Image 1: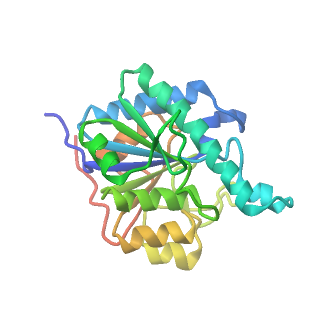
Image 2: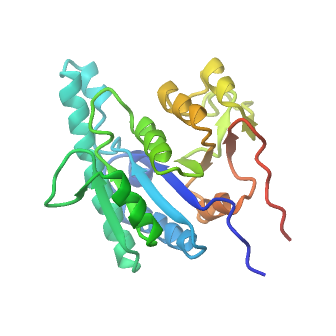
Length: 248
């Protein structure tokens, strides 16, 4: 008997660094193709899926401003970097027969649609993947905050934050080998303990709109589908319990 997904409408937040793979910079086509194939598997279960991509593999606004660049200008450059990543992911998905629409918060009609909430929802209802790019169109906001905002706007059931780590730890596992991964945690504890799940604005947006967050490792093939099906993958951030799906 086929399993039913736990979530019907999903926002997947992918960092720019994840698209770079082991190179640390730029776009690794093999990594992007792997993500595209995982997304295609999720769509096979009738799940509506939207993606928000970061741009850190190409440019980080904060890095530019820390070296004397005007912060707003640096952030706009970062928004353009997310558009490059969105087009790369679109191309990979289309090669697998997935219908995709890229929507940008900064108008660039030659390469993408402008972000229109009702149009985005219509695309999702028709089974298309929607990739949100160019942040929310304003400097000083992270792509995590954009993902939380879009999740609220399209009434997503969950926000999936894809990372290179297995989940959220009580200390940095790279410098603290004894660090313990947290399977479940509440929004307020994330804010109080400064656990770096996302920035405070993004976490607060999810908390205010009761949108759970699942932080997981995207480098393990199949993890996106496992999370959508309700398996105990990564760290669950919310008010209630995860309610893991039982299966044989």
